[in-house]
Image (cartoon, rainbow, N blue to C red):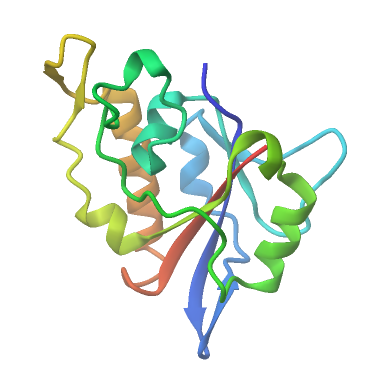
Length: 168
């Protein structure tokens, strides 16, 4: 199952965060990433969608875990971040796209992850199954994160590139 997830990429330039205005065509080589297109709204800036994938979302923020997947009130995997909400210095363009395409009341709050957080995350940690045994993350999800990290590295340094994810 999973959630419909959108994201925009920001870079820090001239003392402020700005939406990355160029499409990252390398993301489209993976079928899971695509330009966000909704029936009621077409973004005016590059906003990406990703196919429903609960494992991807759980790694991002721990959201999407069902009770059956949670062991002793712990996440079934260690998420990259547990901090929800838009950063106070979010760019006006990302705020506009978020306001036009999100549904935070029904699907959860946005999250912000820096390129540094993605690079430093231990993707070998895997997840706990229902028997509390460690299993590796799926190859498909690891491939998606690897693709995302490689594309983000091309546009800036780890502390000057971030991704804002939200659900719709």
